[in-house]
Length: 112
Image (cartoon, rainbow, N blue to C red):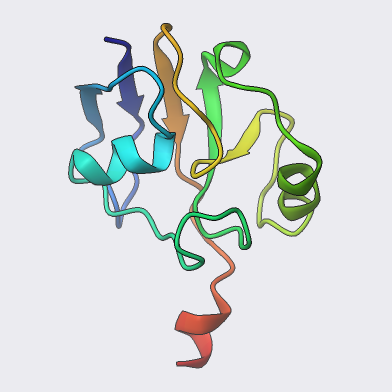
């Protein structure tokens, strides 16, 4: 099982997190299954950017970005070359280290 390391985030993972994840699961599901309550406003279908993460290690081991994910990432706050929507990034067999951006663009939460 690949290891997932989450760098500390003031809201979702104050002390960071380290856990094993099932190969073939999405990063979003792995995070949620291990107590990192990352936002996922669109229900994990790649239609928003609230689950945006920056993959600081293991980016190449994840599945390739499709055109829809690339288009959505253009709208994300703080996007970097190694950014992914965690709901679309599938864990392979290598260790992955992720950083959760400090902010997300969640219109439902901001306007609700």
